[in-house]
Amino acid sequence: MTSTTKTPAHLGRILEALAWASLVAAFIIGQIAAQTDYEVLLQKQLPDVKLARSQASRELPVVYRMEVDGKESPDAIIMSEGVGYGGPLVIGIKARRTDEGAKVNEVLMLSHKETPSFMERINNKGFFRQFAGKNVTDNFIIGDDVDAVSGASVSSEGFTAAIREAVHLGAAQHLKLPRTWQEQSWHIGANEIILVSLFALAFFGVYRRDKAAKVARLVVMLGTLAFVGFYANASLNLGNIAGIFMGYIPSPKQHPMWWIMMAGALGSVIILGRNIYCHQICPFKVVQDLLQKLSGVKLRIKPEVQRKSRNLIFFLSWIALMLIFLSAHPALGSYEPFAMMFSLEGLGIQWYILPAAILGSLFVPSFWCRLFCPVGLYLNEIVRMRRAIRERLFGGGGKPPAAAGKATKTIKVEQD
Amino acid sequence: MVKRKENPWQFKFSFALAILMLFLVFGYFTQSFLEIRKVKPVSVAIERISGESAESDISPKLAPENEAENKANE
Figure 1: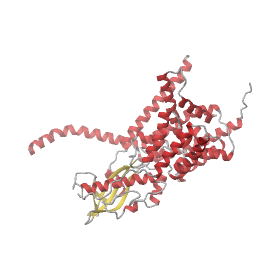
Figure 2 (figure 1 turned 90 degrees about the vertical axis):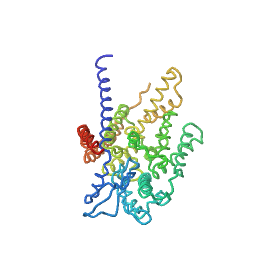
Figure 3 (figure 1 turned 180 degrees about the horizontal axis):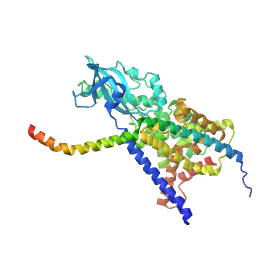
Figure 4 (figure 1 turned 45 degrees about the vertical axis):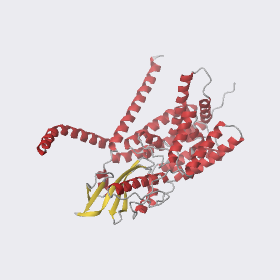
């Protein structure tokens, strides 16, 4: 190899190392900056109130007493942390002692990482107002005594769980009240069964080539558009993947659908070597395919552009991850139009990204998937790595693993 | 062997769409960057790190005083 061909390869490695180093640095800075200081958060929302941490009990949760105009307020603020759809959240619950125990007066949203459009929807629906007047020994369970906001059900569940844990802990530890409330049970309902069925049908449709498989693929296509897209708005995005690295993982009890989605998407690429999510479950892929059928136009992409798109997506996802890690806020880097497509709620420039993606899909098959989607690239990279590992372990001379070979074929068909 | 006919206008049009999208994605990144600038994560992190190191610089000096206080209390 000549020195002229060596230089770009070396430059590539240096750039790659710098990209990784900068991501690690951004992650560390973001984590340090995101450490929660309750008093600072509270003082931002209540600038005229003097706060003092209650010393009545050393047990959790942290409770603050308030002084307004030199007089002690009868309200106390119970602090709580939880995990929403976008990441961690901090809540202050204003509560007042009563003869029976204590009642919630107001819920203060102090810090969150939710998608701004989801938060707007929650505030507009008056989600937090329903907690005012509740006794601290109430159940605080969605579907029981709390109503979720449709289209932001995961965020609603996250906020409710944070409030529930804090008030119940406060009732038990500080007020020494008997545990009369119900504990939250597993949330396996129709939603979870539908999602598991969609994955099961998708696997069936991929591995079989008969008429039944064709029907299964059609059912999955319509089902995922209606359910994963418009109903649950639960498409995978870069923010979800980055959130895993930052520890923003909801508990399986609180959000089993998240676990099913992750297990289905990652399990299919790691265990089976097939990217089931992108080709079958992603509702935005269905939208693109439908638009393509509608227009009937199939413009080709210059092969050189297609080849370079891989590096472009890596570059875009590097910028996105830098923003996410620095801000510790997954929604700030997720440039995908998925959430906007299925909720029709977005902020600023997001309103232009979605129409542009739709316009592109009308003319170019799988426009977004082929040129911009980071989730698809990463899932396909895992398939590629899996195949490389298998070839190294079982030898490259033999027949390539069937599943991985098929996955590559699917990707190639898409890129033609 | 018949060479597949290339359609330059197709390539140009799809390329233009990709550039438009790229432009918008960078617009989104700029919007997010401006949002992050309000929080100033880098300066907050530096402040916290320097604050912690200042505390750890003070604590060894205080330690003998505290020990003396503790002994006096005993």
